[in-house]
Image 1 (cartoon, rainbow, N blue to C red):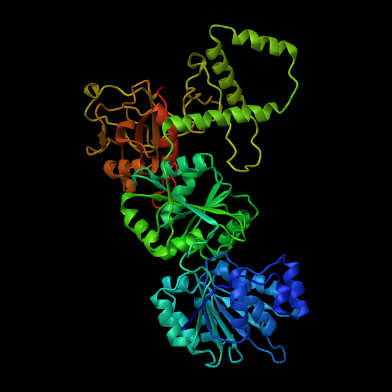
Image 2: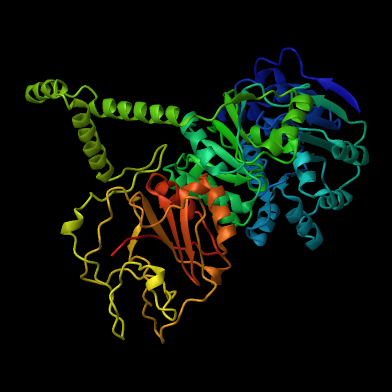
Amino acid sequence: MNAQNEPAQPPASFADFRLLPEVLAAIEKMGFTQPTPVQATSFDTIIKGQDAIVMAQTGTGKTAAFGIPIVQTMSLTSPGVKALIMTPTRELAAQVSKEINAIGAGRGIACAAVYGGVSFSKQVDEVAAGAQIIAGTPGRILDHIRRKTISFASLQILVLDEADEMLSMGFEREISEIIEHLPRRRQTLLFSATIPDDIKRLAGRYMDDALTISVSGDAVGASEISHFIYLVSGIGRTADLIRVLREEQPASAIVFCNTRDETQMVSGALREAGFNATWINSDMSQPEREKVMARVRRKDIQFLVATDVAARGIDISHLSHVINYTFPESLEVYIHRTGRTGRQGRHGCAISLIAPQDIGNLYTLRLTYKIFPIEKALPTAEQEQKRQELARISELKAQLNGAALPPKMCSLARRLMSDTNAERLVAALLQWHFAEASQAPAGKPTGKAAEKPVEKPVDKKAEKPVEKPVDKKAEKPVEKPVDKKAEKPAEKPADKKPRKSGGGGERKAKPSDAPDNVLSTPARSAEPRPDDTAPKAAPENAEDIPLATPPVGAKDPDTVEFYLDAGRKDGLRVSTFVKDIIERSGLQRSDIGKVHMLTRSTFISVTKAHADTLLAALRTLEIDGRVPEVAYAQDS
């Protein structure tokens, strides 16, 4: 294969390509002014009809690089499909189809998108209506070939877009079968961010004297992207991610995960932390994925948590950051991930959380692709506190915004500042102010998710006891846990999920330091709870063990206790449950107190300082496809 690098000086404008007037007008209407390096380098080769392997980073204008020459040279004297563009994902097929339709509008050239998850018959109708170009995924294209609903007898050009991605996804057999049904006399173009051995093997089999065009030289990563890493332990990775986001404050980002389960867990944790986030993975139907992407493109979503498969082909022009929650197993995947940002001349930022097991891949990234990420340290607790304080000050200044203050208030402020307790007085005023602000109606989220209203602290002495719902059988009042020595052997806690208060009863107010928006439930009791049948004794193997020395207990005034409506019947075990919670929250074992696991419920104690963190972790749990209810367990 012959090789060619990018020209020193690309054409100044598309007019230098000597395009047909209707093609040039369409390009100008799309807002394209100057060809990108990949467009300038590959244009003459494609126009001449020569086979080519074009090595260019994702987001450098590859679609127009092959789309413009295809539309420019296509003969319209005879009907039939003249060009086939294969893509690894549905999203990329739809995106390619949309862009080529815009380029070919002036010549009356239509491109049909062909992929799974949508109506088969509708695609047949679009092709029958006269589409000259097809952009689609290998699986659905092959399905049409087998059903004889699309004919490629008139095909002149084959394009494999993001070829390395298609091969890494296991499409080589489908691609080979499709090519066997195409005319042997055709032009074949292969676009790829990297050229591994399997790409060379494919080219040798199906291309004739292909010219290799390298737009990026040895530096595969786009020069407009800055690469950074944060070294983490790998335990509490989600908490580390939240610290990084608060430190970096990205305008918008894709957060990449290696598994589908991670996408939902990370997205839930980000929302609990106040970020505007959602997830996308291959489990979603095509209409669901399209709805999510529409929200992202409208900038209704700030953070998209995704797997590599779901994100392939996604083009978000305003994306400022790519974040690797887990470092990819393949360096080619790293190139594709980070190529989602830094597009169209914008500067992008790629951030990776690097655990000890990722150091080897990081070294290879530097050695092979000449990408040298800059190491940054996670913010310390003191730095995080300073950042929060500065954010509060900025918030106050923004709220003031030059407003005129009454002279009386200014005089009072001067007197207050001269008081010996000035610091405590100002602190109290700030606490009240931000508590009132959090109760105000939340507007539409922009960068952070809108805060949920918080109840004001209520004096416990003024509270009325929680009125429990009345069952058909008489219920005994719920009492505080009693010492185990005083318990009767036959009367261990029955495992019945606490119910919410019935109509007419007041909900018991949470203490001032309780986490926001947590359901108020009765405390775990040593007495049997009423059931629809006869009372049942708790199983003897109920797991109730302290996890730290000294343990944090529910009786400790510095702790709170949560209720989870899942237990051993749901497949939970204390040891694995706690390990999972530590991983999700980033807490230490000493922060978590006693875990009392029953048949269908679990009670977890934690220090008040870490209550919000544990709550966020618990709310990301999914057990057998169900998100269990999390509630704040109070003493009666």
